[in-house]
Length: 337
Ligand code: SAH
Ligand code: SF4
Image: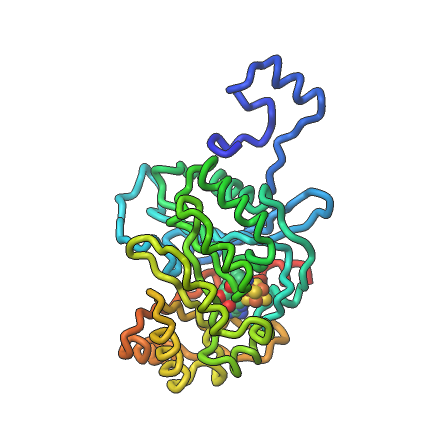
């Protein structure tokens, strides 16, 4: 299931024909989430609606970005030559952890769905396997990064999320150093995460999105429960690998978080945290009935330069697949509306 990407019992050739027949007769099935719709962007990005059966059938979205690591590539630079005849040398898969989300960030489309349900570990890992299969990825030869940045808050589905990571590491063979999990700042989840052994711990990204508690509480109500200082304190015990950094994600909202004073305040905040960190800037992806605006590229670049001038490593994440509704949660929202 995890290496050969089989989807039915009859093709598991490592089992005897007799056993395969018996299992099939008894009604056993290889259950895997199924890609039911695919949308292709001009930039090579593909977004999928993935069907998850189970007690409450639902669809989630999963994204394939050839060449697109969105600043989340391994911390060491290790470019490899293209393998075989593939058109991509490396790719990133963006994975969902819940159907919808309960966190209610004001700028996020997934929030509008509310939380429908948690995904199981099999459904989280299965999204990845379905996409690997679709692109005939050979784990170990092809370079694949995972980002747990799709729908949902992974640290509010902690057990299933980490069980999925263990499956992906131990069964599929992917490296946790090529995985990044993003959290809105769920402190109990972060505390547990810092205790995970490094052989199954993805890298950590924190959705900071604002330079102070006032602005953050306005756009992320969760900040009233766990303010910035509590989040940073929870991260502190993490045992980083050599060269590993914490990523702070920062969505640029026109006029709200993209001003020069915000950049300077953010630089101070990151410096004072004392954490080895980098900042990923994301220009806000618009969505229907969300009252924010997207800064123009010059504003984003000025923001980045200001951070860099203050000694903070900062990157602008290029929007991927905007023509097929790139923003988090946007695809499912658009299709089902
Ligand atoms: N729930 C987790 C992971 C999924 S969201 C989290 O919030 O971290 C992944 C990233 O997308 C977060 O950094 C979030 O701030 C950002 N994001 C959400 N909506 C967005 C939008 N409309 N435009 C740009 N980035 C967005
Ligand atoms: Fe949930 Fe993340 Fe969207 Fe916030 S940004 S509502 S935590 S998915």
